[in-house]
Length: 553
Image (cartoon, rainbow, N blue to C red):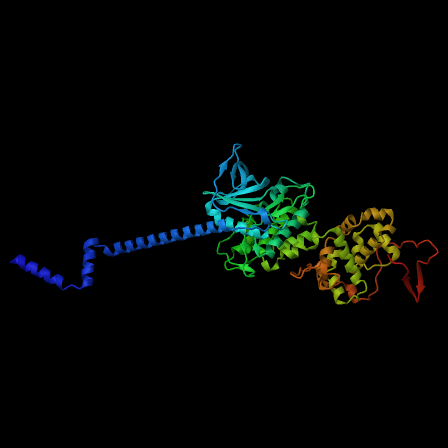
């Protein structure tokens, strides 16, 4: 009886439950007391499985896309010299111990260098031409493909490393590049190729290569001594002679799309510690091509100082770059103001203060002696008849005391030269215009100078120009920046670019004589030179109470 009643009661209880209650009851019966937690864990497991399946599918598709793109890519920026593999090849070991894949042959025991993530560079051949073979692991395939794409677009320039061919097997991808003799680090620290190329030529060619990349919208992002290579010396009638400086290693390059001037840092901070511009570490900072200018400025100082860095030793270098209280040290260039002022602008912590690659390339430090001599002469001709208070003269004379000193420029040149100058006319020794006038006149009448004076000056243009620039280190920079106001005139347009305005020197005072009479004042500290002997032609004559020069030198 009691059993029947129990059964009847149990049946009644079950029959009154809703479908949802039945589901919950079944789950509890199956999973036990902690059913909610167990269900949550099962859901998480299923979700992670789905995510893993999706990521695996996407990676497989991306890899197939990369392989298809690699296999189908054809053509080159240099015609038949660029080649691509159409499918995975098999590496064949040759009897001499070298390996061959497609058109590339290399030796694994001839290691030229090693890169990040297992990248190795071997010495090899491409169609009997010596090359450097870069071997990439699958993790680097995408970066390698980007590097090849950029090289195809840019390597027709003589200061960008040349690309030849890509091959691939099941494990690696092989990129054949121009074989070089040394890195810039070898040149500076091991004195390699010192007799083949000068530091100034390396600087000039490096900035030309960078200017070319920037003109294509390519930001290198890893300029450093190890990534500037020096080509193998060539002789004969080749397309290039001697040694060339080459920009290399485009694995971190960024291509600016659609005319954009800046790019994001979603890929993180790229580059090598000690050579990275400070804005790369600033959150939400605008990053532009100027990060390459910062690195190139450090590179310039590294070359000119024979291995030093503006921000000190490598251990604390990047920390000093980021610390605004740490001023860069350019003491190695105290005797070369023209280079010191350029580099100080290139490594400015404010990206907007840095010059462009084009502005750096056409900076006066890269001019040859003939061009520099012509510029100073053109300036002297241009201001010869200017009134002392004209806008051009005010620009030229402003800050002149920083160039010639408080006591005048005649105290800085040799006595023999001041005597020669005094013989023919008077000069205002506190004037930049008169200093340029003296420079111009001695150049024009060089053959008429005494033998001793000619020896002091040396040959024109090199040692003659060196004499004046060594006596007045700021003369070129001061004159060039002051005459930017004439950059649109036909005579001066060849000396300037419109992409950047270089700052004036820190000296800004106007000389007192500008507010006085416009008549020149003779050397006050020189003894009077005896009158010329009578040669049948009057040297000076009196006219209306004034001394008039009949010949000017």
